[in-house]
Length: 322
Ligand code: UDP
Ligand code: MG
Image (cartoon, rainbow, N blue to C red; front, side, top):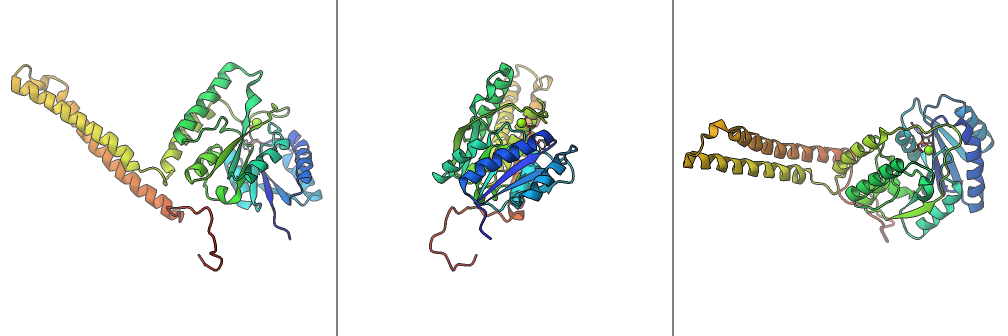
């Protein structure tokens, strides 16, 4: 059997009307590319007719694979399952609702051929005819994420992205974190490009998310920042705040001492004693929390056999077993 060049991963949750058109559009584009490909539909616990539609497609076309999850685990879990079973050298994720256009796939692939590890879609025309508030929420979120991650992307939330296999297999996904794969990969040294793509609003079915997604995404971002064991030293973070707190405690102590020595006021009447104790105890606790976080991060990295380095390429190491 020939090696598979390209795996397309489609997370599917109640998208029955979209599946046949999506399959046809994908097949048309992929056949023209003359690649050996597979399309993995991950059924994320749908309760519509989607699965039987997919089974019919897979009966006719052996390049179509289906992973049926036991229940609705969420888009990130569905994508993660797809990644685990994908065999292609390149992996592309795409929404099932036809909001992403399969015709953009060649554009993403040519970015990877230029040497990038990830090509990330940017739905530039998405905000036409949408309320200004939605547009602003998205722009602020993408701006914040870009600042925190250190990688500027206009559209972290776009599912249509292409990844080289070795890059995406290195990352572990939790929560709603599929949108942060480029961030995780970037911290591991991946080169990332942004590609403008087409966006068509969905015609069938409805979006599976509401406005509460914004909060989830921001919380995921905080977690992510801490779990990036390659770059963060938690003790530096907590320790710094701890020292500032202890320093404030010391200043407050001097203030109280000043009252004591000059006799201007009885410092017991002021909140100063409480403030001194509060700042100093808080400082010590923060440093201890930093230490705990250091231990946890070590366990986290070691339990996954993570090295403290990642190699892009090895040359002339052919007979070296490792
Ligand atoms: N999806 C999924 N599991 C879920 C929610 C969504 O597999 O629990 C899939 C959904 O079928 C679609 C993609 O994820 O293919 C994006 O979902 P949606 O269109 O609802 O998100 P939006 O476009 O509104 O961001
Ligand atoms: Mg959608």
